[in-house]
Length: 244
Image (tube, rainbow, N blue to C red):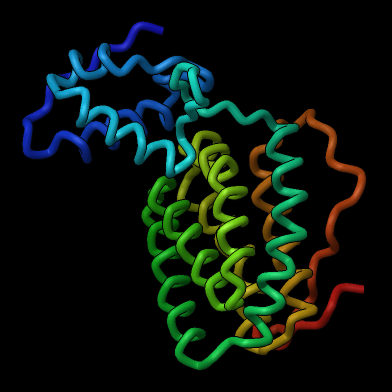
């Protein structure tokens, strides 16, 4: 679809270009799969090709656009089916990582997770879907780092970025209540890590991922044949028991 961007002052160009294009993707002005032409963007923003290219590199790193060798740049397109497949791989790899994180968690690392979790909930309460997703990703990345397995962390980052864009696009208009419900799905995982319980951490992760996917599925879409069981935990929220 035709789209015209306002020119921007030179001192904010790259960051503002990133922000403007990302916001256009999140609000649907730029559609999934839509082509992005560097020269056209440079003209509309009143920016150099270098600034536009740097902005597109950042957006690609964040998973919002894709550029294949000798191909045009376009807004990322991830179907529900694609996201389900990516999430099934993520569930296995991240399951290993969170179990290691739960086994190795130190008091300092746990305190860092408490702080990050508070930031996630603050953005959810504010109804800021984009920042909430960014903070949620940062929380998960902190858990991955706790595993001490750098190859697994690198693989997860490559796998998760397309899913991050998928969720960001589909959850951009969530209400504060809906966002709080989603981030609350992380609580069993965090408690399992605090409790140094690897088995429950894996179950809690699968429960959380399933809750996020449920939010993006159309009401008429069939659910996958196998769903993770919901972990059970004590009324105080601190004692978890593996799902039966």
